[in-house]
Length: 338
Image (cartoon, rainbow, N blue to C red; front, top):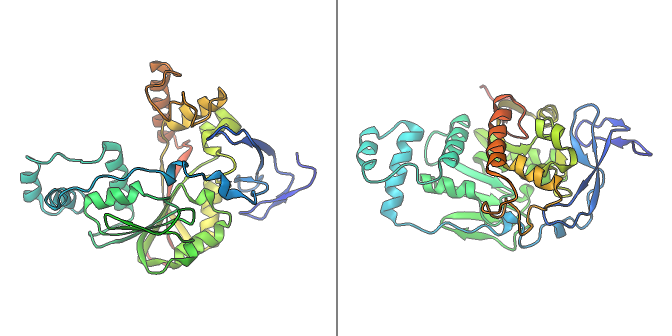
């Protein structure tokens, strides 16, 4: 218990909320940071945001150092687009059948295609002219790159931590806060970025103001109301102290949406085996970026093949049982007729 009460940054409940100590384990500095979990809405949140938060995002932070995909021929891009035109919008069946004899589908990995197509269909994206904005994507967005491969062309990102604006392969990424972005977008995504943002309400308000008519906001975040938090506690890899400022419960993220005029209309569990092997590494005092980390190199032998299979099976199990430690939340403005 804290010697003084804390006020929840989501529901404003003031209480002697349970205190937890998280450790910086991505890079293994093991610095300590206090968190508390709201007794009302369940959100796990850092007690004091570091004044020098930027130092926890060094140049080798994974989202600031992602390698780009190589540019392909215009003909190849055209053929892939026709294949996805059929997969996404049920158009061009005969052309797709012919192209399928020469171009394998998908060009991306199966799991990535399944995730992207699921998101696009849930967001009711209707054609290749849709406009996308990816918030907090770092220096490169694998999400936007996946969309580019599929044939979309109105692709934008924003991240205040990158060095400067970027424009590669037609994907434009701005060095900006959400509040500084202009324009209207059909799908605004926050792929594991909302948990890094100090002012949660302002972030969603700014995103909501950028929505086109019928636009959708997708928030993908770690979820504290999960099996992996119960199992590993502060060794949960997604706690990621101090970068993850807010680790929402399913209740608190829905409440946050309501506070800014957004309605949650779809929830999809999104756990990966990383939740389990990463948390297991932390419980063994192995940082995520340690030389022997399984996250850095799947050939590292810190886990047995049986353990690795178990991690994958556990991810599938918690998704099926709605106990996932990661999830996708789809929001629309409340005045939208669903």
